[in-house]
Image 1 (cartoon, rainbow, N blue to C red):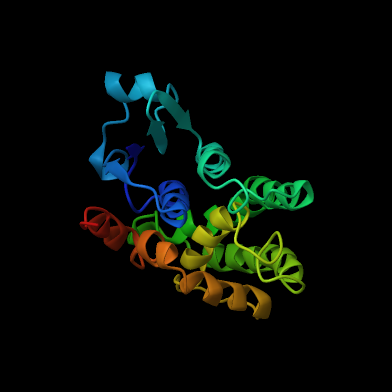
Image 2 (cartoon, rainbow, N blue to C red):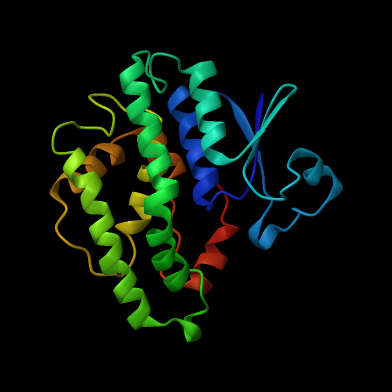
Length: 220
């Protein structure tokens, strides 16, 4: 039985849960992080010395860092599907996973943290608006990639779609201005048709900090 450590409304936890759902694996999840706390306990620090979620336990194997976990799951349980058998397709998947960290995430979190993870009375709406405009430009890079293929690495969903697909749900459900992104919008519709995406990513997160915290403890 797989065990995920982490709260259900964490984007990084959702990457792992979605991958597990696509692979149709049984798992259990333990609520830690955010309003649940528990990251500084001896039990959790023994699993991840960084005291961060998510953590995956698979028998006697423990893996932390969300993208490392997704790669581990795909290589072990989805070789040839989520983990492409073709070396070039695998490289494209890895490339877009890394692009999320190096290029996409800084712009995305300027918006998400500024609007959703900041108490409503402290939100700098001008700063959020400017960050949203910059984020739209970053999305434009992926929009061009999706002009020629339905998924980021080709014709099938792979690990490359998972991190960006989680962020995409939040992007289209925040009260911000967005530029036209026809190819990303079409990709987002394809993701929304997937059962695992519906179950693990399409979770209401609220329009502000107070709603986010209240929804954090909603049952699965």
